[in-house]
Length: 455
Ligand SMILES: C[S@@+](CC[C@H](N)C(=O)[O-])C[C@H]1O[C@@H](n2cnc3c(N)ncnc32)[C@H](O)[C@@H]1O
Image (cartoon, rainbow, N blue to C red):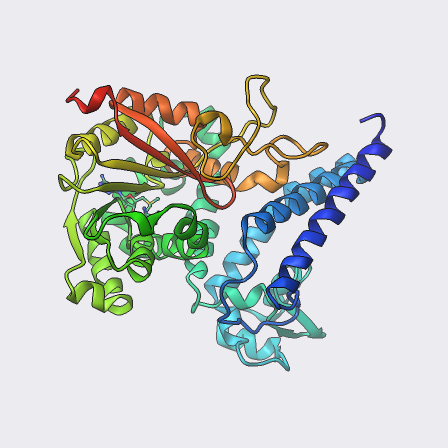
């Protein structure tokens, strides 16, 4: 860029183009552009969410943030960032007190005195919290002291699975993050979570022994996120070509949201859900409610597993690990991969579903991005147009947020493709193919390395 003026123009041009793309996707789908003040949650699917639209949304996010960073005084930008913790705290109050539920079906709004009584929180304080959120369109103040739901706040209702994710992030993850600096500078062998909760074990131990309600919420949180991201997962991998009776082993599958979505769409597939006993119990309950025919038809088997100690069920066609490897430091990650490999027959495939970290600075060695159905590591990169940062900057934050959650909660990390390949290589697995999913997530397909020999 020759000057900041050029940068502004280039950012504006990106924004204009991206917004046009989004508008025409809505027009083509014969959908209205969302009204921020409209809390009605349409059951409509699919909303425009194709790859092009997702890309355009990333550009809008990245370009808006970059535009602000250019036009604002640096102090202002930093003040805004430093204060954003209060948004998290306010979200925690709104979600924890179920404010959105008390506003459901009340388009005329509810007076703060009524909300205060229902939430058990002093009205003057609650109103200030809701005003902060209303500045970001989460709730709306219709007249002084009268609040209503919006497009965003309506999703904060307990009825929606994302409610649990917001609870998880704004409670234990947020609390742990407050200890990040202390943990790094005083006792780095302990995670910020361990500092915050004064607990010597890990998060998984904590939620399965000390606070099981937190564990149940974590399971539902993963379900909420999983459901919101399932579209590209179902459409971008050729599930329909898997032969009749193929068994998918969902290793550390949580409640098994993804398997449940696959079971509903692809009747030829069978599933083995493998988890720690407590989560498996929760999974059984949820499948019984949401997918009773898969359970009664014997298409899903629930099996306890400690993947650090043993391999999953042998002889499945496909082993699927969603957000498992990112939970563990390298040594444990390799142990898990080796355990899975020990159960794989020569033609079995392993799918790692993970955020794949993108470089902020493009490397000269990267080839062009020929995207969908990428065969090789070279074609993985999704490089943003200039003047955005190579990873879209604020448009590519989800992977970095997840990386911070790993650092704070588990002492683990998100990884780049070469890092995944190095871990898998140590476990005797070879990368076969990279499948694009929404955002920064990918399906990394591995097969047995060294000609499928035992290692
Ligand atoms: C980040 S969650 C992912 C859950 C699920 N795959 C998903 O994406 O919704 C990680 C899962 O690993 C499970 N887990 C942790 N330690 C485990 C172990 N040693 N053996 C088996 N599962 C374990 C947890 O119970 C949790 O459900």
